Image 1 (cartoon, one colour):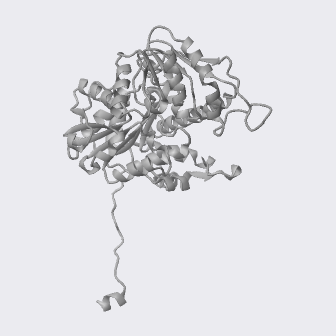
Image 2 (cartoon, one colour):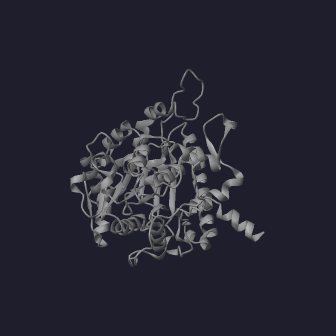
Image 3 (cartoon, helix red, strand yellow):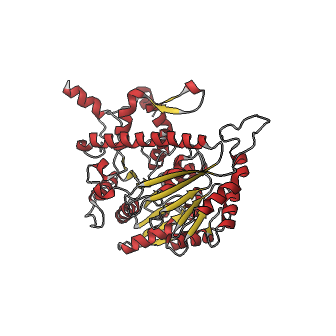
Amino acid sequence: MSDYTSFLASKAPRAHASGFEPHSLPDHLFDFQQECVAFCLRQGRAGLYLDTGLGKSRCQLEWLAQSAAASNGKALLLTPLAVAKQIEREGRSLGYECRVIRDQSDARDGINICNYDRIDKLDADQFGAVSLDEASVLKSFGGKTSASLINLFSGHRFRMAATATPAPNDHMELGQQADFLGVMSSNEMLMRWFINDTAEASQQWRLKKHAEQDFWDWMASWSRMAQSPDDLGFDGSRYILPPLNIVRHKAAGSNVKPMDGSLFVSDMSATNMFDVKRQTTAARADLAASLLTDGYWLFWCDTDGEADALKARLPGAVEVRGSMPIEKKEEYLEAFATGQAKILITKPSIGGQGLNLQHCHNMAYVGRTFSYEAWYQSVRRCWRFGQEKPVNVHLIVAEGEDQIGRVIDRKSDDHIRMKAAMATAMRRNAGRGEAKKVPYNPTHIGRLPSWLNSAA
């Protein structure tokens, strides 16, 4: 029976390793970071899903340096806006040969760091290794960005996807990460472990109950995920964060008019969201301005109208919006990140990923969307390892906005369950070694049929 159990275990889907045994790892990596880098180097194509502040950048830099040395000497790190300079500073301080590039002519041996916005100016085949920072950019199932990145790097031996939120909205989005890495196509993943939830007559997919353990075991065979070093079997006491204080404010005079001739105001939805925001912008901006104290402040908004209202009420604030040239966005975000500017107004879609802003511990949301990833990532710009003060998050809401909070809370619960399941899977698979390496050893000797031999 034990032999049969072992036989079944050997048939379980596991990612095949394409990497190499790592060289000695630097002392600047903590113990759990060294374990993650070593695993990813052996794997060759791996997911690195460490929570914010756990050192994804340092892990990526070391992985890229060793992968570049094992390939053609050139590695590429793709990042969100304004993060490239931040990683370049960190990399150089640690002794890595790295630089920010704007097009292919800037590329050199070592680690080349570039914004996603400039991917069309690069020749993917010129790099032996690639890592996607904040790789949840792949989340759009069948989207143009996802398809482009998957196709551009489909032949690379060394690929990494690194983010704190690999599946910010739905577990099925993990298929995009696996697809980019060449572990398994999104469609095959869905067919193996997911089922279409026809109860809601939608295209939503959910994990099959009987397949959950097998699915997370498969994830553990090609990725590392943790919200604390404890999840990887290491001491996480130094990663205990200061308190997060979420304060809700009801904007005075923010009552909205019912739509479509209704007698009452219904909860905000995707269809009436911008109408509600438009009616309450001034009231929310007034309240936000009244919260301002000495020190650094982050003001998150969702629309240009909200940004305009904040800018008029916060003299001296730096604003970054989508219509600005890339160079200007980078300049202003860099000014706040380095402490030159004290107040920043922007959207989570622009400044909500990758930036280390631990010097700031006060933020206010004048506009919020239904996106859990935007909420989670933007809060974690300040509430992360290295933050020494309690982080104060002020939520300024108007009538009808309660539905946004309920949706985000539900997605937050899903995200917590995903990380817990993955941590359990990694502990369960800790003694099984790394991903299986199964060489192809054919034993069947084929022969041509007699009619084909005679025809020859």
